[in-house]
Amino acid sequence: MNSILFLSIIYLVLVILLLVIGVIVIYALKLSIDALKIYINKNKNT
Image 1: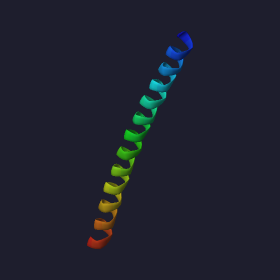
Image 2 (image 1 turned 30 degrees about the vertical axis):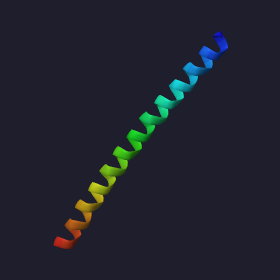
Image 3 (image 1 turned 120 degrees about the vertical axis):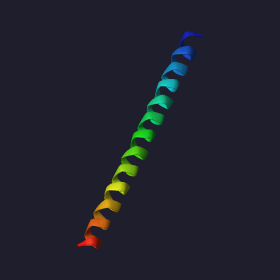
Image 4 (image 1 turned 45 degrees about the vertical axis):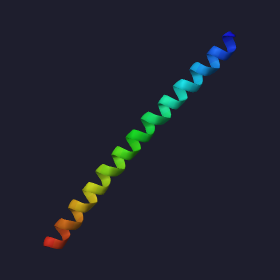
């Protein structure tokens, strides 16, 4: 029983880490896309 519990805890931790990494990646992509849009708009204006 203890080994099953241990494995399930490890699995939960891995899933949580993946979710956190996914959120960070999506947020970073969103920020970079916004920065690119601003950069493109500045270049169009000049």
